[in-house]
Image 1 (cartoon, rainbow over the protein chains, first blue to last red):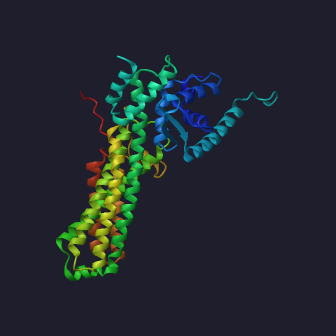
Image 2: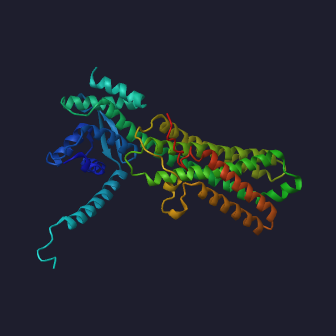
Image 3: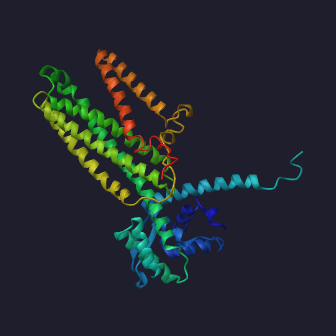
Length: 112
Length: 294
């Protein structure tokens, strides 16, 4: 999938990946790739600025973690982030359903 | 030069320094430890992306912060002004003769409050329209920061004018009003000061994307008929004229038609003067095209 196709959906995907548990930057990128079955050609450099922006917007919170003898920034969803995720999911489902209904092949004989 | 070193230099070049830069470098270092073959892109491009996204967010936060502070200051100022009649104010002042100090204070307050309302309100309106944008262009972010700055400055001037008026009216008006006016000025000053760090933070990091800041037409899209072309001088004239007429009618309704007319004309003229002086700076009208600029 081309990066341009993802534009506008990256925020929702990041929020979704962080829904079950807090993750650090590399793990978020890995999770995005795994969940998409490797089809997301995600430019890795776009994720870190997005994480910082989402945190500045109050949708994510982050803290240093020293687990595994390594200092890492771990991100988690805030309450506002969870609300935004619910809103984004609804918006996406409505959008996808609309596009699907238009793109679906017309039933034979529908056009008289 | 290693990737980290290049990124460090590029982050500094775009205005990202201190703890934020250290944090970004630590995250990138951790990323490369997890995957030495990771492709994070050119250091310059990555640094610019951080500046674009964080600079945009900071500009929006500055605009929202300034508006929230100005709304509180507006309530304090309005409360103090509305309390004047209950303190035996205006009539008492006329009997004793207004001191030059109080008159100057009230004039400064009345003028600055309108500038603060316009700059802060339009900053908020633009920020609301763009709040879901990942990035703003440099000009638009600058306009948001300028509107926040002018709004906060004018808000401070409003409070200074109120304090000046309170100083000049001391002894001619109920003592409790003087205390109220000074308290409102002090509390308002603290509220404005709390909004300043966001403004400074936005000034220190601006996005680098090219583009236009738009004009008042972009702020008022959908709120005024497109035919009026809100980014034009004609619209400014229409607005100033409407303001002058409204104030004149208010004066007539208060049995003071000549004073109302004078105040209406003065307000309309001040509105046009501000539009001429600050219109481009605050992104109310587009900069003039300079086809032969070097």
